[in-house]
Length: 511
Ligand code: BES
Ligand code: MN
Ligand code: ZN
Image (cartoon, rainbow, N blue to C red):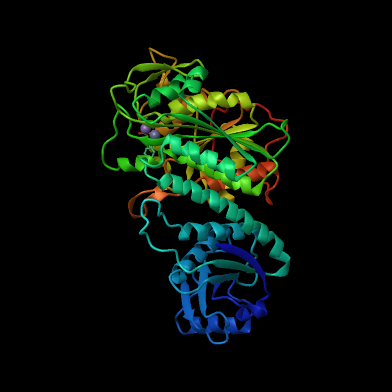
């Protein structure tokens, strides 16, 4: 898809050359300053065909006096990027099966389209037009739509253009993450994820990829990670991605992504119903790869490291058994009380490995707990972070990209149930507050740097009729990185230049 910004003022909207014109209004902003369109809107309201209420939509074919052959009137709930995106997606559903190749989108006079509106438009359109075909080549053919232009006044043109470009880069990252998530586990193996990482390095000169195999992981002492792979015939991989956009002396941001390409639960086997969805258990890994793709295109002045421990969690005669004790790379021993709590076992070694980069901050991304899905559903990712500015920066990045996170508590009390008689800690606590306990477990391996953890168990994919990966939280992560690099237009809460070790907080409120 080709995204453009087109400059046009109110009076010329009806004369715009496009196959379809989408007009986004709000309850308060319903005038376009184009007399033809304004009359048409008034008539539609008077005739009872249209109302200035959020969510309303009216398709008009060959409107008299309008150059575009198709017109869609849309009412957004308000003037926010989020509501604008919802309106455009609704309009797209009206015309995506029609013959329009070029769709122009314009807002009511005074709507004030910003870079965030532009980015939201691209992300919305990309999301709505994605089709999974890798193992279903007979899936519906893509529609006729080839080009979208966002119509703005002259003074907004350059901001909007930046927003469109940013949106496009992020959308490509989101699509990559989504596609990797959707690929079945017999296609998307740890070896396959490693080859995808290498492909990124081939395509983008700023990315370098290194892949560690079992002997190297044994040498590093990653006993916890390796204990998860015991039952699988697929070899484990540890993927290291580097993006160098700043001086080598600048401390990097590190992203760590859980890459379980299939989670059966191991000997603590999961029930059969819905187990297919555990192919999405590499959503964290996919979002790290997707974010690297977006970043490689946007080229912010920052250094970035991606760490992806990836393997399968399978039952077999060689599998780790409940009660087995493993030694993590940090030296801390772990009693594996439940082999289905495997995410934290692979992540803890990656988090210890992250220390060698002397990171400015580390962000861990994982489909970690069913408890997080119970708590937050599929709306927000769970954010665990005892470092106030880091937490605020991540929350803000999510708000600006409609890829939101919700602050969750990480008090030490949640870790009390991790005590073990046979090791430094167990890998599970009780059922209650399970997402918080998992976060406290990870925190035991992150004392050397500023750290945040996103539990994306609910946000990384959808179940039911719309079953499929979402590509989240590529939007949040990319925005966070751009903000930290100062490349984002709305850098909100940059981390202080002098990084102070966070003071552990007793109680954590949502910010
Ligand atoms: N991958 C799952 C978490 C998960 C469950 C994600 C459901 C999305 C939907 C993780 O490895 C897991 O199995 N967690 C266990 C932990 C428990 C044994 C402490 C869980 O949440 O049940
Ligand atoms: Mn599991
Ligand atoms: Zn898992």
